[in-house]
Image 1 (cartoon, rainbow, N blue to C red):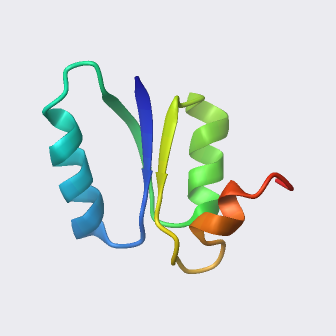
Image 2 (cartoon, helix red, strand yellow; image 1 turned 60 degrees about the vertical axis):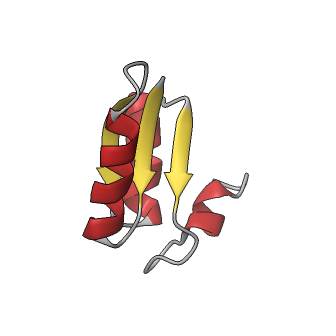
Image 3 (tube, rainbow, N blue to C red; image 1 turned 90 degrees about the vertical axis):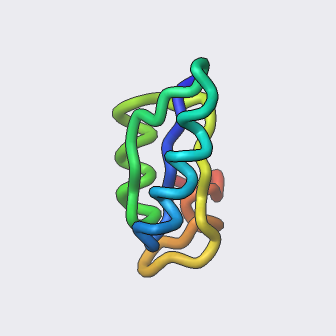
Length: 69
């Protein structure tokens, strides 16, 4: 399963990456610090799952998940 992690806090991304590393079937294909980076990562890697932080600078997780993009 391909996963993108989007969070503006590096420690949070690191923690999620460590938790996901415990599962052999999970591959973190990209990380993003904001919603725009997350959208670009999704376009490039076509992940199965995107873990989005709700509160990020610029485009937040809720805006990135909105179907208007």
